[in-house]
Image (cartoon, rainbow, N blue to C red; front, side):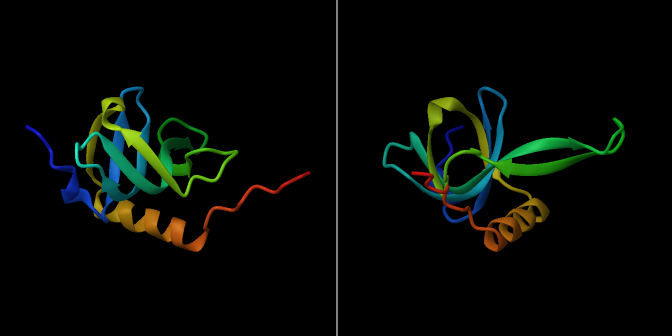
Length: 109
């Protein structure tokens, strides 16, 4: 089944990469060939641990720690799957990116 990527336009999506990363972000575009995906405010989804193995939690962290990543492009050959994010997680993600915009790294020069 071929997915028409434009169905995700302006929705929060979850991407699973071939290397196993799970990324959440707002899908803002694709190219005519459907081989490029553009996300705003991408975040990596990570599993947290409250000190024991029974109370794992899910968290999101910046896509990169040392650069501003307000928008990022992915080529579809690096993606295993893309799907619309479940409502609760999408709402949590939107709260995070709306209340804390990414800061521009300081110039030490």
